[in-house]
Length: 92
Image (cartoon, rainbow, N blue to C red; front, side, top):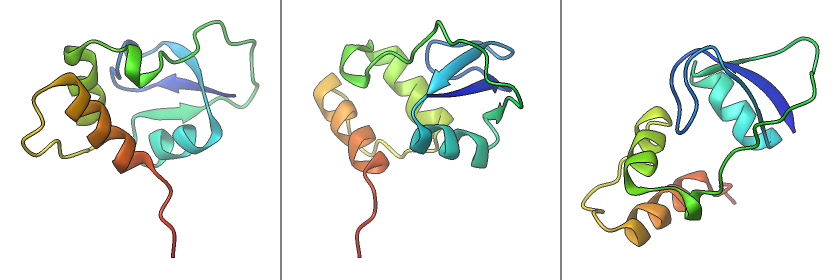
């Protein structure tokens, strides 16, 4: 887990909060300007909520924060699928 300080509201977190994210997600959040990595890694109490456990409003906020186009996805399962597809590693 990588501790990040959120620069913008993201999912269930508000700007200024510190939360832990898996390395790949942390890299994407830093690269997109949503968060900054902390120099010192404090103990992290707030682990991210799994996508499948988020409410539709949280999922839409997450997609917006990560720049994920949901297309015509409207149902929770469709939104979760779109987010997971966008987050999947690109294989060549």
